[in-house]
Amino acid sequence: MLEVRADNTAATGLYRSAGYTVLTTRRGYYQPDGVDALVMRKTLVQNGVGDG
Image 1 (cartoon, one colour):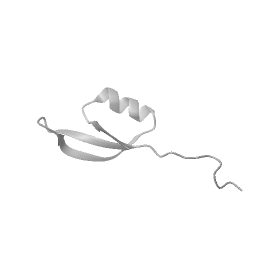
Image 2 (cartoon, one colour):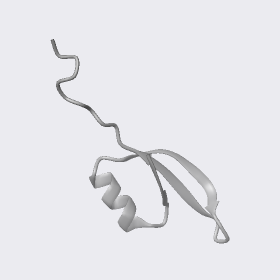
Image 3 (cartoon, one colour):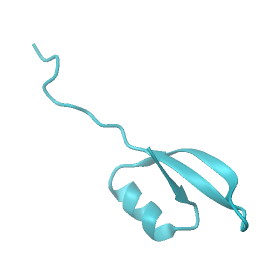
């Protein structure tokens, strides 16, 4: 999981292209500007574990 400013379009674009999705938004988290924080996560899958 990671947290990023909602107005940081370069970072959010990078994370989305890497497979991260928004889990929740923390409204007004960054002060003093009151900018929202996006909590993002990426689900990792380990191949081959438990297969047979």
